[in-house]
Length: 245
Image 1 (cartoon, rainbow, N blue to C red):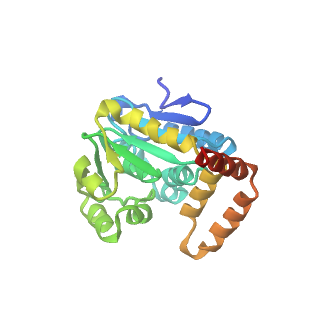
Image 2 (cartoon, one colour; image 1 turned 90 degrees about the vertical axis):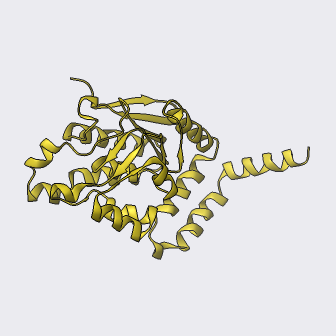
């Protein structure tokens, strides 16, 4: 059986490809188990994560056959919720490269990313209410943060699916690239992130994820640590030397 999550490791980034193309990369328990393993690796050794899907699809949703069999105790266990929240909380940025469908749980996985890129074929939405359930793996809190409460309510209550152009205009996609350029565009963003100080990047993400009541204290504490960093001294010295030439 093919591995449901293909991992390509580099010094400064990891590319994870959802790999169940025969079912449009539907997210099953085996894939979720591998997501947890990957998160443990990236929590211990932080790197940028690029998420993408095989076969021209990001993820068509949760595996409906498994979902149909789940009961109340499974809902309370938060099977997908905990995995996607772990993705969201990774120390370094997460980039989702979305070609084709990102629906239901697949959309919620994309919402967990910090930056989302799409191809013209991208289709994003949450049709859960049509299946007798709700989008409970992050959409009800994460989507309003991305597109605002009114638009999030429209998507979640109607179940309609956005095409790439509308998703971009709503701010759900940062940019749209031809399918063949989608992964290179994700790597280009990862390159720019990798050129910066990793600790400053991690602290910036921590501040971005902090609840409103944590500000501005969290920025001041994180900045205090960075002000004592040898890397800050090195980078600023190099900047000043360049500016003199």
